[in-house]
Image (tube, rainbow, N blue to C red; front, side, top):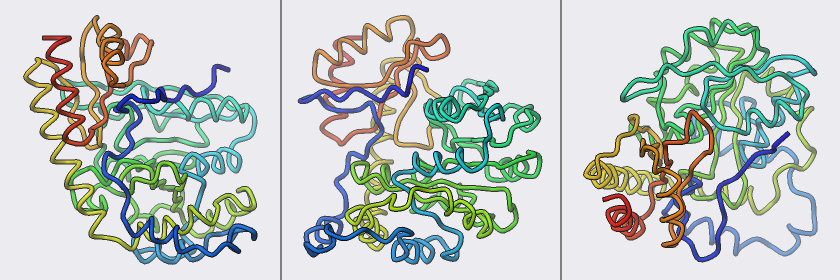
Length: 344
C-alpha cells in the first residue's frame, strides 16, 4: 500500500493546505488546560469520555447513548472498519473523496469501490449507483473533501434507506455549510433515530480549531454505539483532549464567531480568485477546489517558494486543480498577491 499522504508540514510556511482553522481556539480551551491538576496526567483518562459525551449530547440534542468519542474522527473511522468489515467485504465511496477511506480498507483487507461523482460546473452530485455496490459500509463526506460540495439532507436520507449495510456520513466540515452555527440545516444528526443504519462523524479539528488535540465524535443509534464501544481502543482519548473538547463545546459564542469569520474570508477569497479567472464547485467548507489548468504544479511550487502551501494531487482526476484552505485575512491577502504575480 502507498499509505495516506498528509499535507506538507514545512517550518516557516503559511499552511493553506490542510484545512485547519485560521482562527485560534476558544480562550476557554487554554484556560481549561492550564487548570488541569498534575494528578490527571498520572492517571488513565475516562475510557468513555463520559463528561464530554454528556455535554456533546446536550449540545447536539441527542442522548449520551448516541455518542462515542474518538482520537479524532479518523479514530472513529478505524472503529467502524474494525467493527463492520471482514476481509474481502466492500466499502463504497463516491469519488474523488478523502483518501484515508482507501487506506483503512487496505489495512482491514477489505475492497474499496470508487463510484464517480457526477460533476457539473458548480456541483458534485452523488452517483445514482452508489447504493447498489453491495457494500457493508458506504461512506459519504458531506461536505466532500476535496470538492467542498454538499449533498442535501433529503438525498442522504434516501441513500440510508437504499443501502444494504451501514451509511457513514462524515460531517467534518458541516459547520461551514452556512445554515447556522452548528450546521443543523445541513446535518443528519436530527434524523438518527429514523435510520438505525446511519452513523455520523464530527471533528473538533476544523470549526473548533483543535486539530492538534485529535478529537472526534461518532453519532449513531444506541444499539450500534454499544457494539462499537467494544471495538474501540480502551483509553483512546487523553485527559487533555477531553478537557479541551468540553471547553470548546461550552463556548458557543466563540464557535459562532469562528464560523462567521471563516465564511466572510471565504467570500473575500472567492472574489480574489474569480478575478484570476479561476473556477471551483460551490463550497460549503473552509476551502476551495480551484480549477487551475495545466500549470497547477508550477503554481504550487511557485507558491511554496514564497512560503505559501496549498494542496495538489498528482492524479489524473485532480492534476489540474489546487485545493486552497481559507486562511486569515493577512494570509489570504498574501496568497492573492502571490497568485497575481505567478498566474496573472
